[in-house]
Length: 249
Image 1 (cartoon, rainbow, N blue to C red):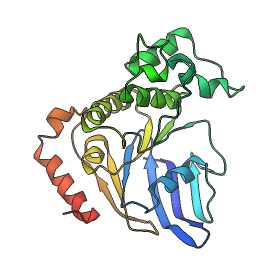
Image 2: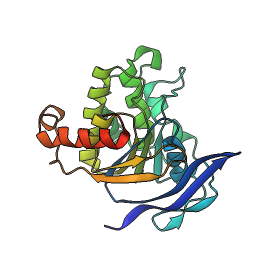
Image 3: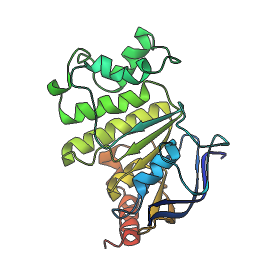
Image 4: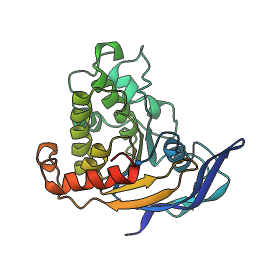
């Protein structure tokens, strides 16, 4: 499988603080890859480097063979907080990124309706953020990235602040979206079970300066139904293995 994203000996320093050191990994087309690691190891920084949002000093990052130096329109980024504009409706928030880029045309009504249906937001197009649940706001945030139909979706702990039930529901939504569209996804998460449920591979990072210490392939059948997958003994084996690598068991 040819690499869509290729990282070779990537390093990043903020002032005197070495955050990342010698990070190397390849991510293929339509792969779902999660990044696990202790707090402060540079997971979010690495995602921002891939996106071209932050510069780096060492190594190289390539996207479709070209060096990453600035944000690419083919990459969508979902941040930790939804960051919706409260005075805009769901429709206008979903289209905000497109409207701010004169080079991109709004999707057709049919394409927009399909996106809204995919997100489970049909009937809420005219609602404002304060009228939505926390999970729905996060779905709008994911939709903002999907609206541009990116090749790659980068997600920085988008569900970290949610309660367990809402998080599980959004995991199911994310699985459904990925299984339908098969975009390349890189997800930063602190949840080991979430990483196992969603991913084809899990990259485990070390303490700061972060580097990849293990690349674990998750060989569980797809499509995945959370209630079924979690009962598979192999699911538990992966959780135990990753917990040991993370030093939590």
